[in-house]
Amino acid sequence: MLGILGKKIGITNIFNEAGRNVPVTVIEAGPCFVLQVKTKAKEGYDAIQIGFSPKREKVTRKPDMGRFKKAGTSPLRFVRELRVNNPADYKIGQTISAEIFAKGDYLDVVGTSIGKGFQGGVRRWGWKGGDTGHGSMFGRVIGSIQSGARLGRVTKGHHLPGHMGVDRITIQNLEVIDVVTDKNLIIVKGSVPGHKNNYLMLQEAVKRPKGYVKRVAIQASTKKSVKATVKKWREMMIKAKTTTKKPAAKKAAKPEFSSAIPVFDVKGKEIEKYQLDKELFTGNINKAVLYQAVLMYSACARQGNASTKTRGDVSGGGKKPFRQKGTGRARAGSTRSPLWRHGGSVFGPHPRDYRYDMPKKLKRVALLSSINSKLVDSKMIGISGVTVAEPKTKSFRGLLNALKLGGKSLFIVDSVDQNVVRASRNMHEVSIKNYKDFNTMDVLHCDNLVISVRALEKWSGRFNQ
Image (cartoon, rainbow, N blue to C red):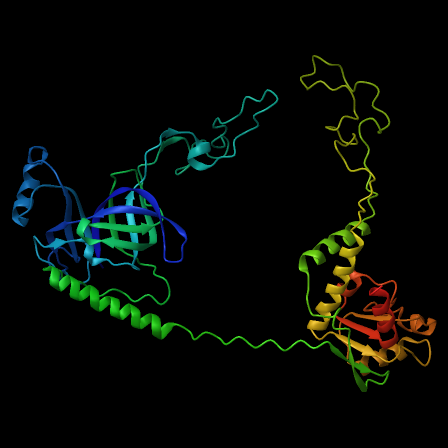
């Protein structure tokens, strides 16, 4: 597993190739020096000990100085161990730089969080706290921490106030935005633990995105070998992206718009193709006006008869329920206060009219757009005439089956036949409207729009006036 030590320089933001503003953290990574190589045969596990950031020899302990002299380096301030798969790839005194990572890698960053000092339970553990108004003395204090009868002691691990921060924090799966090798800088997306100049440990991410190719181990002894290995890894990444990328699905071509609708008879046989007025039925749908029309019709449908009683409307409550002082309770002047059961309501709803209107031209645009939406979706058909043999539901059901209509259907006729009304009134998915009476909501609520030829001619002539 690849890893390196570093120091947090600061946070900033940059613009990526797509033009988006990305928050990033700049980390000074390396150069690090290998101080010790541990093997499973000798120490029981495979790891390397590396150091970063030089310090004065005066403040270095003598045992540590012996270790640094053995590695041939100056005293280092930040020393950590990293688990590796093959310790034979590393030698004491070897240099590890930021070149082991490249743009597109994913890292796990380990650091120490910022200290917050002694904090209460509300901030440290997210306690809710008690009431803060009306003379309450609770606020943000601790309160009860354990039952005296059951255990008589505080259980281990109970959340209490105490020192907050200065904890070991691991931020997983941070993407490397860029690597500046000449300055030993690694720029990662997002934030990392700790304050400015905080020491960090950067490791190859354990949880990588799907399709990510694991980086090959870099045996870095010279700059040439490092660059060759990085080049090889980048070639593997490009190959993986090209092989795992799914081919883009071809978008289905939209059918050409036709302003002609099929006309059927009552037996479901297609008679002709009726050509609509091309100036009206263009296929254009004004969604903004449709939205306004839906709001207007929905508001007009509201009854607005909700009514509540305020304190002045509720009867009773003329006498104080108890004396003002000496009871230990809050003073109360009436039993009809909004705080009491059966009391009045505060700012409750009262009967009102929600209706409002739209300009006539906007209504016309909305109605035409709703019809055009059905025409574009091929949900509009014509019929020679809406008639039934007898006023029975069975007869109208036969008409629907002959036309092969499913879902809600709106029939627009030039004159309403009472036999048709009686035959369809038990069918909730069917609505019969005169060409003068239907509106935008009627068209939008239906799945199929069926209009008689005579009604269509009269409606077009009336609409063009």
